View 1 (spheres, rainbow, N blue to C red):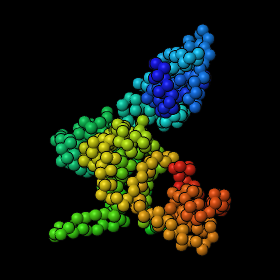
View 2 (cartoon, rainbow, N blue to C red):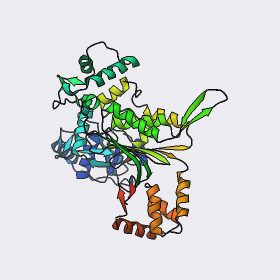
View 3 (cartoon, rainbow, N blue to C red):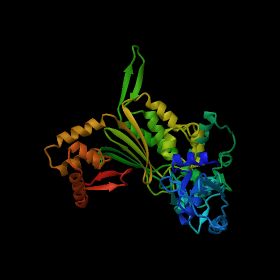
View 4 (tube, one colour):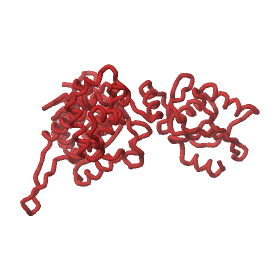
Amino acid sequence: MTNKELFGIISNGENQNVEFKSSFDSKALIAINAMANGTGGIILIGVSNNGEINGVDLGKESIQNWINEVKLKTEPQILPDFKLISVGNKTVVVITIDEYPIKPIGLKGRYYQRQNNSNHILSLPKISELHLQSLQTSWDSYEFPQKGINELDDIKIEKFIGIINNTGRFSSSSDKFVVLKKLSLIKNSNPTIASILLFAKTPERHHIRIGRFKSSSTIIDDRQITNTLFDAAEKSLVFIKNYIKLEYIFEGNIKRAERWEYPIQAIKESLLNAIVHRDYREPNDIQVKIYDEKISIFSPGKLYGNLTVDKILSDNYQSSLRNKLIAEAFYLAGEIEKYGTGFLRIKDYMKYYPEIEFVFEEVHNGILVTYAKKTAQKTAQKTAQRTAQRTTKESIVSILSENPEYTKEDLMKLLNKADGTIKEHLANLKREGKIKRIGGRKDGYWEVVE
């Protein structure tokens, strides 16, 4: 690495693959471990957090001692590359870490991974997920011997085989169980987790909670759908269609075109994404909420692999599948297209709905997508005007019941109140049990308690 290259790296700041350290210490070891469990990276020793080159004092055996410390404290052993660069009379040590092929790598019994420009300790489920990912397999491909193949519904299997033969993506006249073996849905005469989720006579307890809301605390209709995945998707979409408007457009002839109140194909794509890509080890349910001004779909489990919200929204990513067999089944059935193209199709559908805003975000324990009418802000302002004669506390409750995602800053603008006033009222309302906060500041929402 030349001095010019070094200056270029420093000028871009810390990121997913770059970290600055003033000295080689325990935090540097954590960064090495995290990068090996991620996509690799570079650590610059002798550079402060703000990018100032302070250099590092080295003894005769310093580098060898650092190498030995990395080897002794990581398992399997990591062997990063150490290089010295002189900048004037100062020395910077460049540590280059390659992505380790079989993950995770441990550091004194703990496991870390790089996320954006920070290092995070991994939970047990994430450790398991990382290992499966590095082995190019997935959780849903494991055998489920607790239930034999006699627990699979023959009618559902035959229907599935008929559909995939008709799509042209798979063709076989073999016995149904031979087909399931070809698709790895049966292994060693045992059903896999995927086949149980897709075809079990008695579905596992993975629910879709779906409801029509007038406000966050006023429910018009509420269902809990517990079914195998194809049937659950179908029933959920029927429920959604029952609660959104359909209009017919005549274009100068006797033919009519249908136009739903919301982009139904995009919503279907998001619903299927929630079903196919959710983390089925999470105890939470998929949640679909239909309001007057928006529809939201929540799927348990954060983004899988190295995917980030920014990568997905910019279309700069490669598909990474948490549930490979479930995704393959939905693909063969023609329910989803080529992996990784779902958001491109959603964007195409949204072109015909300029009045609807699509929001995709990672919340504290999963993924939330929202289709919101762009008039929602005007509605909220009218709500604030209607409640002008009420007390500030009553106004806050009224606004949050219709707009649970609103922040303290939104309330300040709508009610024209100071920061301290809103903060005090929110604290009082929480203490009185009238509202509660679900999630964090950036990814949470308010729930009004009746």
